[in-house]
Length: 490
Ligand SMILES: [Ca+2]
Image (cartoon, rainbow, N blue to C red; front, side, top):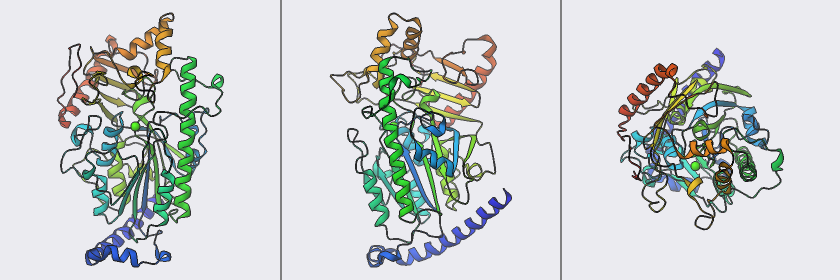
C-alpha cells in the first residue's frame, strides 16, 4: 500500500513537472497550434505521454445491478466484467439526480443540481460555472466529448473536440467509428481527457434478441408479468449492446496506444426506465455502476463499498491528473479509494429530482419533485408535491402518442392490480407518494416498506430530515412543499 502511494506521488511529481513544461511550451506555441498539429508526422503522435490520459465512459439509463459483475446473471456483459477484473468495482456509487441532463451537469461540474443550477430536465447551468472541460483545458489537456451531449448551455461546456451522436432509434450506430477515428487521427503531445456518452440503454430498447423470458429473474421492485419480462429482455438486449460497445471503445483505446497510462472509468447517468427506478430517488434510480481501471495504480479485480457521489468525479479526476481540486465545489476526491489507501469516503449522499420543465403541459407529467439523503443503512425521501399523482414517461406514454417511449408493462401492472392485492399496493405506491418516506436498506434494499410513520424510527427520521434540510439550505434549494392537487411545473 505504502509502495503504491509512493509511486503515485512520484508519478504526480513527474506529471506536474511535465505539465509545467507543457504550459511554458504551450504559451510560446499557442498561436501556431493548428500549424503544429498539421505539421506533425503521424508517427510522432504521442499517445503514451508521461501524463495520465483519462477516459470517462457514461452510459444512459443503465442500472447498477444490471451487469454480470454486479451479480445479475441474466445479463451478458463480458466487457464490463473484464474491465472490473482489471480494476476496481464500486458497490455504492450514486448519481445526484435521476434524469439525464441534471445528472450529467453534476458529473461535469462537481456541483450538485441546485448549486450548478441545472436541476430541471434540460436546465441550464449557471453562467460562469466552471466545468470539467475548463478544468482539464487549464491542466493542459486536450478535451473531447463524443456521443450524447445533453449539457446546457453547450457553451458552458467548452470541450475542444465535440462529436455529437445520439439518435434514440438508432442507438449508438456510428459512435464507435467516431471514437476510433478520433483516437487514430489524434496528433498532439497533450494528454487526453475524453468523455464518451453512449445511449444504448436509453429507450426505446432493442428488440429481444434471444433471451428466454421464462428464465429471467424479475427483481423484487417490479411486478412479475409477461410484459415486465418482455421489457427486461429488451433492456438486457440493449445492455448487451452497451457492453459490446464498451469492449470496442477499450479495444480502440488499446489499439491506438492508450493502455498503460490511461485511467478508464465506466459509469451511468442513472437507472433504467423501469418503475421505481428512473424518475425516482430509490436506489434503482440513483445507484449506478462504477468501474475504474488504471494499470499500475488501481489494484486489479478489487471491489469497494466506499460511498461515492458522481459529483466526486471532477475533483477525483483533477487530482488523478496532478491538479488540485477546487475547494468551492460539492464533490470530494476519492483518489485514496481508487488507490486502495482508504475504504471509506462519504457518510451519506444526497440526491435531487425536479422533473421536466413546461415542455409537457398537455401531459401535466414529471412534476413530482423530491429530495433524498442516503446513508449506509437508510434512505429518507422528501416528496415536495405529495398530493399530485406521480405521472412520468412510464405511466403517461401511450402507444399511439409516444410509440417509442411506451412500455406495455405499466398497463399490465394496472390491469393486474384490479384482481391482485400485491399488484394494487405497488401500483398505488408508484402513483401516490407520501411526503415522507423512510427505508431501512439493510432489511429492505428494494425500498418497499415505508417506515417513516413508525414511532421507533422517529429519532432517526428527525436526524435525516435535519441533515437533508441543512443540505438544501446550503444548496440554495428553497422549493417549498406543494400541497395542492395540481400541476405546478418548475
Ligand atoms: Ca439518462
